[in-house]
Length: 206
Image 1 (spheres, rainbow, N blue to C red):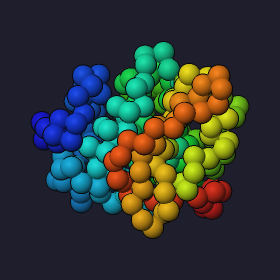
Image 2 (image 1 turned 45 degrees about the horizontal axis):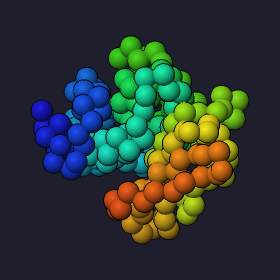
Image 3 (image 1 turned 120 degrees about the vertical axis):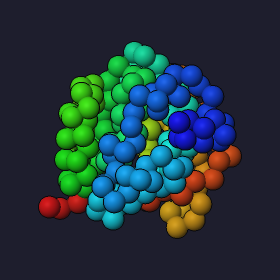
């Protein structure tokens, strides 16, 4: 499988993560014109002027998140739902926030069609997180912030982990792992340059 080969080449070695990719057909999450390219390790356009990340970036972020089978995970930035689908095969429960209503609906329909019943996609402001479901064991942010957002840090349980792209939105960013400890937060730089759209406050009207 081409995606698995690309993942291994980029350093994804976690067997559970590789199995999750093996069980999740990326072609289900892209529009018809891009299906022939679904198995390439490239970002692809999706609705609402957004893109879906290349599989190796999804894999490396998922591996860094270190999801455990009993974890409750928050994803910020659903897109068409591919990353949430991968997480759903690793975690007990996935909540995914998307500010674009059209993308939220596409993701819900795809997850339902594939029988992924442990994902809840919510149209909402990802920068605020989901306080009514907090604390979370893991938080994955798929949009760039200049600093890890305070509301999301507050919703991470002690011992929990967040992976977030940090940096100025129109430049390359770095992936950062934040671990909440009894004393505060520990930050580790993955030294992996990425490029994500900026984390935008609010919900897209319509």
